[in-house]
Amino acid sequence: MSTLLTTGVGVTTLSSFTGSGLSIFPADKPEHSNPPYLQPGDVIGITCPAGYIKREDIQPAIRILESWNFRVRIGKTVGARDFTFGGTDEERRADLQQMLDDKKIKAIMCARGGYGTARIIDQLDFTHFKSHPKWVIGFSDITVLHCHISRHFGISSLHSKMCNSFPDDFSKAEPIVQDTIMSIYQALTGKKMKYSAPADSRNRLGQARGILTGGNLSIIQGMSGTDSEIETNGKILFLEETGEYLYNLDRLLGTLQRSHKLDNLAGLIIGGFNKIKPDDPGEEFGRTVYDMVMEKVKKFRYPVCFNFPVGHQKNNYALKCGAMHTLNVTRDGVTLQE
Image 1 (cartoon, rainbow, N blue to C red):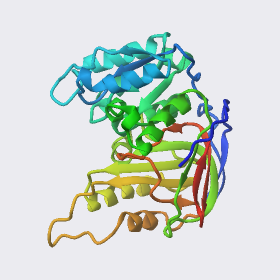
Image 2 (image 1 turned 90 degrees about the vertical axis):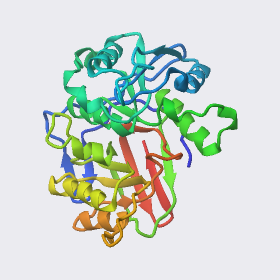
Image 3 (image 1 turned 180 degrees about the vertical axis):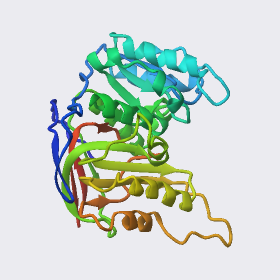
Image 4 (image 1 turned 90 degrees about the horizontal axis):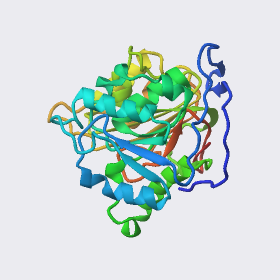
């Protein structure tokens, strides 16, 4: 796993080659662009649009962000609690809204995932954000924000670890943990990212170019038919999941298939599918994640790769949702390059 440290900034094009030919995005869809990259002294806000986190639990993240020469603004929802949530719906909405509107805040890092972003997304006003975009950072439940922002505004965001994944002592952390945390810094400061994954005999070989989109599978399925529904036409889609039964994974993937979200992809990336719950005795599902995925995409020709380093796991690298990428799946391995 490596990152390419050459800087590159710009607006992506609106066409990409898919497994079934050339796909042009509709004319009324926003052109994708990156928010301004961060400079030393810029402010990163920390907020809790979903689950609850203690104030002391974000201290490791604050130390590392400040070591990168950024300033940190702690939101009112950090330490707030309404049962499982980081404050009431209104408190979480107001805190995130303030950070979306504050010109001094250049990036917003969500403290943790959990559940709750979908409860406030329709009450958020993105008017100022659209005129003054900034990086929104997080994964899991934060998939709601990634998909909503991409669908309506064509603004890139950062799918990455959050405050609750930062190590207490960065110098003593495992190399893979250090590397994934540093990928956040590299992405936020304008490095063009390049990632690799080992070869897998079950991969479908090929090359694709398209805007990167995706996130947590159950969150994506939960947004189906809503104003935040993911758009996949002509894009490279990545998926990850944790803590589900095999039969439910098949149902979630089946919903993507039946809603034609898999029909016209440029490529498909399967990340970590971890902590799969055991089947009930006598109710064995009898299919692996590999079986399910390939069954759903068997009539298409785009490349597919498995075990990519993204998801609820240590090797969860920062990915720029909304940025143009090239996916290359070969017998020797996989690369994804911005």
